[in-house]
Amino acid sequence: MSLVNFRGLMRTLIFLGLLTPQAVSGGEVRGECYEFLFQDSDFSRVQVEEFATMAEQRCRELVNALGLSPQGPIRVYLKPGEGISSTVAHRNRAIDLFFAMPIKGIEAPLVHETTHILLDSPHPVLREGMATAMEQSLGTLRTHPTYGASLEEWMAALRCSGRLLPMEELERMDWQGGGWEINLVAYNQSGSFLSYLMESYGLEEVIYALKWTQKRGRMPLERISQARFQLPLKELEALWLQSLESRGETALARELCSALVEGNLKNFLGKNLSSK
Image (cartoon, rainbow, N blue to C red):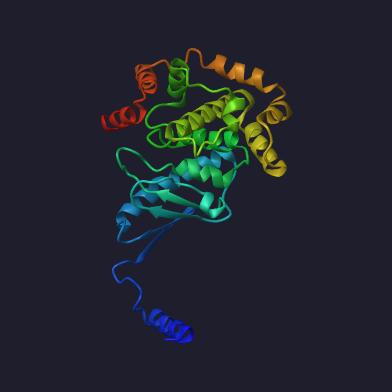
């Protein structure tokens, strides 16, 4: 069969629907903030509608907190199973969301990913730190990267275990390719740092800092610290760490510290989530 005839046959089969899987059809649940898209073979409409009700409420709270809103409903492609939720694949215009309610006790990081769409930065500490901080404030701790512990407890555990990294070192690391534990350290440390900046300088100033970096592109955290917060990075970092000295020292933080020291982090987090 010639290539031309083969293409003609394929177009005919597609037109007749003979190559379309008959058991799979798409669903949509649309609200003011989100447009959830899913396969009927993966999720029931009732399940998605229940999630959408909760999601719309969280989105309203996030929009009110940031003073920013999407231009239209954000497309959210719901994915089954376990995976990494992201906006990167859609250039921060839509979300791939692994819909876990729960999968092994983990919820989907919807507030985190929505923050990326509403407010972003080319700098990983600002980008992921802001999203992680807003997830703790308005979403859930039972998601990546906190896995049931607060940012304060994570910081206490990182300091106790000797895993806390200088910010200049952290911003140079490969967060995605450096391993699962490194990813958790980077996200939680950045989330704590951004939470401190919001407490000390106000949410409006931190939002402006992220927008400022969007216009100017990727730059060292040292420059951002001096330009936007009027302090050298090491001084700002010292004030942040000083503010955490008496916070987060809980039984969970001590157990988390032990898991980090013993190299048993993933197993510990799984058991901690399943016990709640």
